[in-house]
Image 1: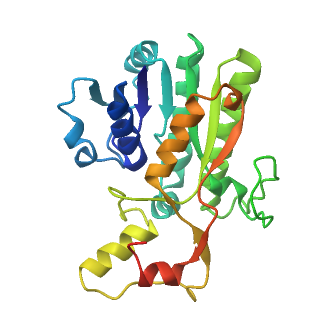
Image 2 (image 1 turned 180 degrees about the vertical axis):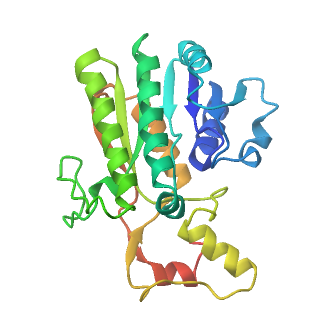
Length: 260
């Protein structure tokens, strides 16, 4: 099969591309390198079933050509990381909402399957654990910039599901939880790469608060496997699916044992 991955030079995108190529698929990557890196895909550049384009989703002509050539579009391009979201809320909203709308518009012309990445952040302040895909989304006030990311991704979900209901565009919405693994950067506030970087440099590991706050961390290889299975599951079309780990670990334990 032929796949188009937006944000393909990013952390998850590069691992997905790697796995698809191993399976024998053709992969086309589109990334403007705003948060991705050529280092993530350097080992794939010479592959005869891989192409990459360093450009923006906003290049409508290129996007239309790439979507037309693809059988499946995996939309991972987004503003990511707490630091970026807090510092650049305008960029967060525009990148996430406009980018998703352009992907859906291009894909709807030929009804190409679109797998779009959302986030567990959309659950906001909802305290009903485990999170269910049909649970209420409880966001904080619009005066707090951190909620702009959750709101923009929730709107992405509404857009994708509306294209399915109104235009019969096959879509799958994947709510990704904390994903970790090789090639993840701590540049935008991701906790585990920062722990590992500080440990390797022999510096004290920074833990905010008591360290007793717990999170579920999912290996990127498991996330990629989930994405690949969902793309092959007809019943997943038109659905929202949580993808993550069910085992909680405290931040303090992660800080003490960052290689877990």
